[in-house]
Length: 159
Image (cartoon, rainbow, N blue to C red):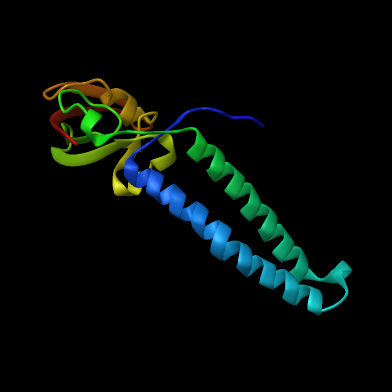
């Protein structure tokens, strides 16, 4: 499984992944090793659910470590200096007006690995992200959503 797809991250996203990797390698591995040691102390491993759980957790953690290492190896970090405030791109903060509800919303456009819609961090691959990428202040974009089409007017683009 050699997935060498480039991952686009903001500096904040890069730090979050690096911190998670460090935690898994230093803290989580030790916690799991201790759980396995305790489970072995219970004796018979053939019907030892604590041992099975700990080994399963260990496998999941190792898979996540490999995945994080691969993502970090293929990461392209967006330099804030390179973010153009004339046009929407990954790394932009975009204030839009929902023309139907007359509501202003500010989105951060991020790579798919950092998307967190509940915190208004939307992926460049999401319907809203795709519609906004490449647009300028004053543009009105139509976005296909499950409920139909929403119209957004771009009010501001910033870093």
